[in-house]
Amino acid sequence: MRVRTVGEGPAIVCTHGLLVDGQIWDRVARGIAARGYRVVLPDLPLGAHTVPVKDRHQLTTRSVAAAIVDMADALGLDRFAMLGFDTGGALAQVATAANFDRVDRLALMSCDAFEHFPPALIRPFQWAARWSPMMTLVLKSLSSPRLQHRPLPLGLVAKHKIDPRLIEAWNRPPASDPEIREDCVAFIRQMSSVDTLSAARRLAEYPGPSMVMWSQEDRVFPHRDAQRLADLLPGCQLRWIEDSYVFAPLDNPERTTSLTLEFLEL
Image (cartoon, rainbow, N blue to C red):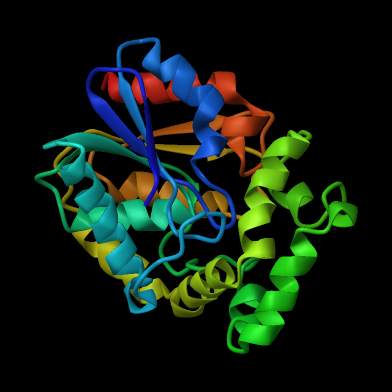
């Protein structure tokens, strides 16, 4: 797993969703690091990673969540804050539920939760993943330049135009490397709400500070889940992000940075 860090100080691990990587956090990470924090940005094996996974049987929600904690071990992080986002929000919930002693505070932002893992938008991908050639065709089609400015799929997750260089960086691995495509297929195929529902039961006892941040105009993850998560986590703060769809770190990095700093200072 490739990992980048920005800044020095108490650590916060920021996760990401399917078919993107840690670069989605870059603008926010600079603002957080400037306030004296170490921002850890892993490139999770969710389809835009550049190094294929050696053992594809390890591409389960629980194994990838455990790998986040293993990454923290490798970086010498005994305790750290976790900010789970998009598909990475489900991973953050599972990792935190199994490691209260390591994750000393938890934030969740517009992410899979409860029975919505995967969310409705991803379920057609999960159906396609039952037959690898079909999923290969889907992943290759998503990388077509003709689709990068269409309402689907990016128009559902980003309110404002994404830098074409970033889109190209995300699309290149699954479009060019069949091993990366197979990694993505393997992860999507196994996604199940069994994991998020199990994590939720454990998170009801989470002892650390917590915050739920949700995009007000989110078209993918239900607002109801934001309230449910805030009600579930003891003493949780619920905050809304304006002028943004799912990709708040790109759509509204200023508000995302401000809320993340508020979370870190709870």
